Image 1 (cartoon, rainbow, N blue to C red):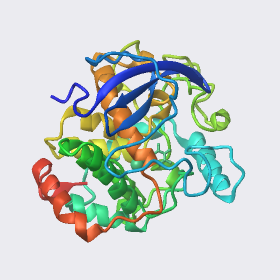
Image 2: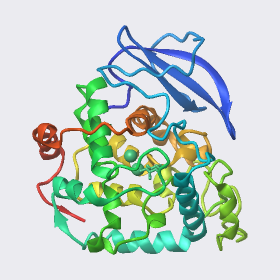
Image 3: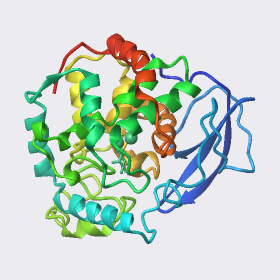
Length: 338
Ligand SMILES: O[C@H]1[C@H](O)[C@@H](O)[C@H](O)[C@@H](O)[C@H]1O
Ligand SMILES: [Fe+2]
Ligand SMILES: [Fe+2]
């Protein structure tokens, strides 16, 4: 199910370039109405379309009235972590604490504890409403309440993928794990909830944002955890890898344990959407198995909407709510264990 990139437009292959640490390819999906440039790590993507070079790999125009801004709301490029600004100081301080505290031991403990899902019973929509009060300190591109981001992502996907309701719903729920910031979930600190994710139990790749702060992580020089493979084996599959603890892995556990009928690509997107070192830079590929490689196609598509839909333009919640309630009903039980 959903293993092929479906839908609109033809796929053209375009050339490759280097971004910071590793080479990656650009794919451009085009149709008469749409062009999406997708930064693509060097993972083979099998799509039945011809491949031609394009002159402009930076073009990013999405269909359906959704326009991709050249800069974020603060006038910077998206995901620019070295700009001089007050917000960047908050973001950098966030990554400093995140990189110091995320250890193999910590992740194991959190997964066991939060994996019990014994903290609350509520519907997906109730959780969405809880996110109204939180602002993500790791994010250089958005300082709006999280509910805005969820709706912006889902609506942007809906415009370009009207038939993929599962992908739209994935957009709506992908960041719900940020509810860990809420007092009824232990009010975890931001460093244990948000930000890019990375595997623990093996060496921290240099592609990680503000990599230098890992030097203060107690496992940085641990002889077992500091090798390229660490506790893992080549091709072991990302399912078997402990990722830094946060909203992604938590929401993945919630969706899985509550027996969502969403396809496996949706669960993959939820668990790895913050794994920028892999999906943007192509690091850690040696841990992937064939199924992971297959699912990467959807993660690349999803990621564009997650990132570039961030803006100050508000969505009318009441207007779109009935539509999303119908999707929630299709793929989730009325009440979930959290
Ligand atoms: O700051 C952001 C934010 O926390 C997102 O929810 C996460 O998915 C991104 O990876 C991260 O960079
Ligand atoms: Fe996220
Ligand atoms: Fe997001």
